[in-house]
Length: 74
Image (cartoon, rainbow, N blue to C red; front, side):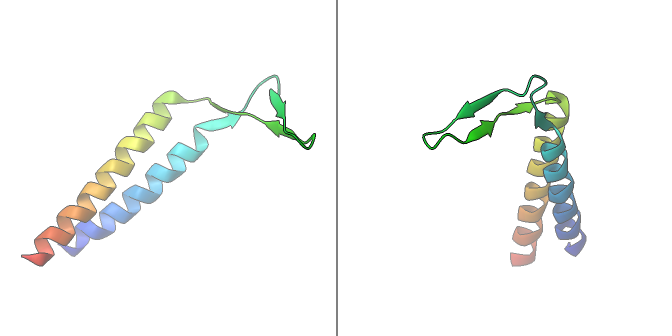
């Protein structure tokens, strides 16, 4: 069952990458000013399907890791 742990770790990495690339900058450069006068630019969810796919793969990766650890315990 060691392969489940490896597949889970790879799935977690792929899920995190998909979640990261689903966000980007606002087209018009929306921003907010903080109390010290610095500009803070907003991040926008550009690809919601990629985000959901990344969340699903991330959850599956964690599930595979849990299954691997539970089966190793017994």
